[in-house]
Length: 294
Image (cartoon, rainbow, N blue to C red):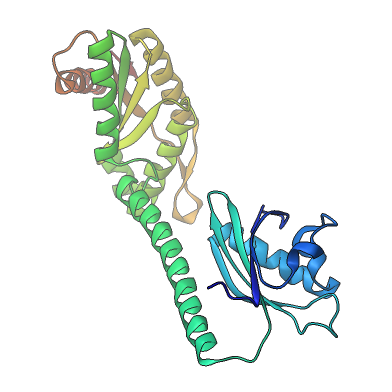
């Protein structure tokens, strides 16, 4: 049987009642003025009501919120419990009464439920963080080799199936060992990190970049032919060559990069396309570095 000392209501996020599910305390008569739940409680309790509604909306549940009636002489107060559903907020309003062993049990269950809600929220946050850590290169802050190759493979399959083009750009820092030997590995790490930033700011939202290995970076350019990819690579080369880096002791230095470009041209495999970009990069190195080849 329904507890005749309480009522069940279906409300929107602002506490306006759309349906009285059951009513054992005559709440229906008090809702005729259209003020929703706020019309039931004292002005001092409305802040508590607002907090209660926000918690139900954001976390999915809230339990044992105490509010006071408009007429304190006729009613000690109410206890609010709420759950968020697909239809709105289901709120139970129970008249205050001396606590019993059942109340204690309900309180324990409510507390455990709140802990469960919080634990699920924390688990979801940690899963997002773990996914990010598994996808991002920790030094440069750009996607790692696994992720950038997944993007490359995806666009290769699309190009092969629908006969559309896309391009790859392979980037390698020139004389990077010399940077480490001259200015220290910490300066080398700064160069790698900043290079990732400079590359990203020259790309579109639809492009992909990732650390391919060592000081090599791979870019995937969807719907981009060889000529357009060459222009992107040249812009990146110029941007990096203008950047001034600082080593310990205030020593300034610059770096350059060599870049190899390949555009999909009916290759049988992604490895073939990657190989063409790598050979173009090697030619750029052989011809004096700080240049783009395709």
